Image 1: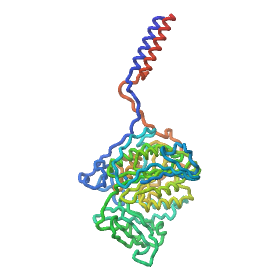
Image 2: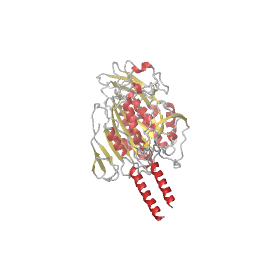
Image 3: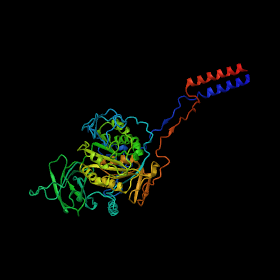
Image 4: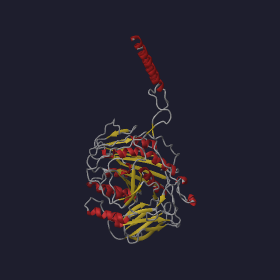
Length: 558
């Protein structure tokens, strides 16, 4: 028996020694990987003015005029950062003051139907020293996971016209007074053929020199960073007439050029002598997100993506002043209907606000998208020298009875030169697609949609188009922002797949759930000594003491 106790002591000592592995061993979440995109532009392209973009970070191809073919310039950089003091929450039911979804540090004042959240917002029209990008929180969802495609329906105009025609014939509720055949693209350039942004555009039914007419202008807007604007005769002129008078005033100029134009001769190009071609030095970026229960995955991934998007834009456009805004919406009867946070120039504050949001509620298919879009028209968008970008993230359309206010809000954003980039999530059907694609078309932007290549969430409906490229969603969003800041439509450089489709969609209410609805970050294991059985030193000594007592007890027993 004494031999047994000695043998037990030896075993305990062996276990103790094996517990003395590398105590520095630890597991940590793998940081989001990023691929550096290098420019393939010719040497002389480095001398082009990209409006504050960092040339060595250029990595996008560029669209040719009115086509999908790349130009000779192989790469174009991108960048720009660009005020508001209010955060509002319009609730169907009074929210619980202790609700976790209320932003930290916000004072909530209540009225019977409206909760107003007020907090500190830094504002200002001038660029300030760049805010250091803070360390990303450890989200369960990994940045760079979601995949998406994009459609530019102005480039594929004939295909889009056919799509809208078939949609109208199928009886799906369509945008009011929306006739794509009445489109006229307005282009303002200088004598060198360069785009002129922020030019004032006024379209009248009669000549402004005719004093008899006191009619209000049909359209008052301004050109975007690419020197373009859009006139929709059916919407702007209610289909009255075919001839119009186009007046253009360059920024910082008193001279106005007026031309007689017709819908038969498009695009309408106006050359303004001595006008300067400038790119935006400010970025106002708004996220408008459906936060009903079905959007849980998309919301969580956006939380993980926002840092890489902001950091990439800042690297590419170091001189651009960035501001961020957030609008969340659900539907009538939920905890809140809309919740609005106006622009802030603090990424830390914006990210904190976004991280506190949760997806919940909903239940029926349509949601209160129209109210969120109406709220977006009241944001403190900056007027001049600014790229105004909105990402509308949703998986459902507005209610049919709300189509008119939905498109009234979209029209107001169009006239304010806000580019709406819808992001269609899983669950999107024909009604949502036509609304979101129309919003992108009217604001001269692109329709983005998630794809199945990430393996995340439910199957994603394919859009009604013949062909599209698939890339990472974060890179796609960065490319859209870069295009608005550089005044050019940019091509992707990291294409995951090229898909051809007939537009087939999964049937209603029969979407099978994926085995993995979210991809967690992998664990990074240390490659040196393996972990000990008992990693803590006090635990090892306690174990040894217990073993010695046990051996003494066995020895006495014998």
